[in-house]
Image 1 (cartoon, protein in one colour):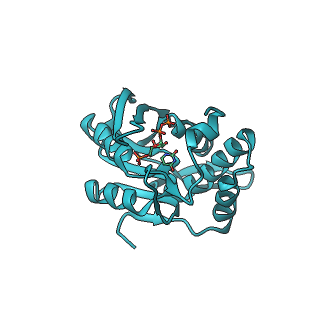
Image 2: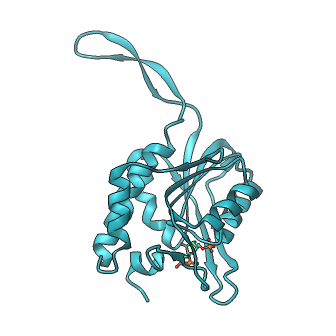
Image 3: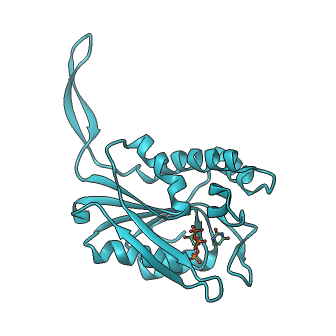
Length: 210
Ligand code: PRP
Ligand code: URA
C-alpha cells in the first residue's frame, strides 16, 4: 500500500459500489447510493480530525469529553459529478464550507479544462476535502489539487468512489502529500479513458443526462 493512499475494505462500501455499477440502477437510486457511500467513506477520511477535551455537564455530573477541534473543513466537489458527494460530508460535518471546481474532460484528448473555481477564503485555514466519484486518467484530480494549492490550500484530502490504477498513480506521484481515499481500485482504463469495469459516466448517471 502506498503511503497516504487508503483503499476501502468495508463490506457495506463494497456492496453499495456493486449496486452502483449495475446498468439497471436508475438515477434516483444511483444518487442515493453515491451519497450513502460518501458518508461511509467520509467517516474513514475524517478519522484523523483532531479533538480537544471540553467540559460537558451530563444529567449526572460534569466531565471532560472530546469534541472536534482545530481547523475547519472545506468540501470541494469537482463539477459536475462531485456534487453527488457534497451532502455526504455535510451530513458528517454540517459546519463545513463548500468550494467548487469546474472541470470537464475533452472527449477527444481526455485533458481536463477548467471553467469555474471558487473556494472558501482563506482556504489555507481549512482542511480541504476534494470529492469526485471517478479518478480515471487522474488529469482532473491533479488539476483540482493544483488549484487548491495555488489558492493556498495546505492540508488536502481527495475522495473518490472508483479509481483506475493509472489515475491513482498519477495523482499520488504529482501530490504525494495528499491523502487519497478510494472506494474501489478497478482494473484499467479503456481506449476512451473510461474505467473498467467502472460504472459508466458518473455525471450522466447522477443527473440523468446523456
Ligand atoms: C468525470 C469525473 C472526473 C473526471 C475523471 O468528469 O467526474 O471529474 O471525469 O477523469 P480523469 O481522471 O480522466 O480526469 P467529466 O469530465 O465527465 O465531467 P462531468 O462530471 O461534468 O460529467
Ligand atoms: N469519468 C467517468 O464518469 N467515468 C469514467 O469511467 C471515467 C471518467
